[in-house]
Image (cartoon, rainbow, N blue to C red; front, side):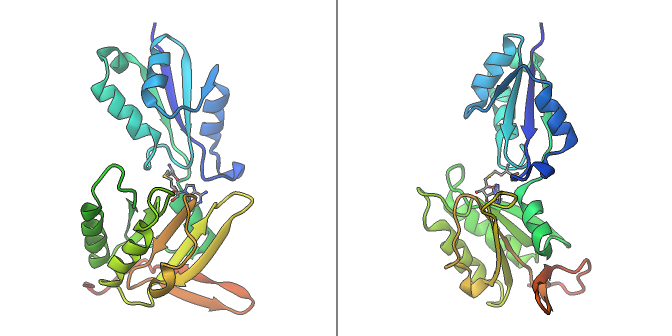
Length: 230
Ligand code: SAH
């Protein structure tokens, strides 16, 4: 008897961002569960049932798919016999980027600002390196109740490397009824309202705004980069 575990990405909130594959995988399970702990789902799957773990956005981006892999690596041997399917979803940075233009049009990276699973000095080192290398940076988990200061500190850190006028996109609850996407600059960003449902995209030196009469400006990063920026 081989159980089955599906880890399904639901997209950022709008049902239209749910992929047909994810939709199908949801319908296909007898036992729909959202669990904080991957181990619990794996233990259920080992019993021979079909289990689904749902995850906002993409399950492989700062989410359940990696937790499941960790449990399989460190858990009992029987976990390795399970049929595991990871169903991708639209991750938050793609949904936010699409709302505003094409800020991820050139090289970019994604970083979680949560220091629950890594030390803060490592986050600062990565911020310096990413900004210094000219990547646009998508910041997940900018703030939480237990981590009130990380976002402002990260903005300060980036301001040490990037010009004050660097465009910053703040996307809140994208795809949901209370969605809010605003554009600011690096020197003003730390006072922007960010919460647990916010994703922040910090531009590179190449990222620019295209003003449009009567419309919100487009924020984009051109596809080509000519200079080796510091
Ligand atoms: N697996 C998720 C990310 C989980 S980490 C994904 O792929 O999107 C949780 C963080 O994701 C939040 O703190 C926020 O930064 C971001 N996020 C998730 N949903 C969002 C949404 N609808 N709008 C903006 N940011 C979102």
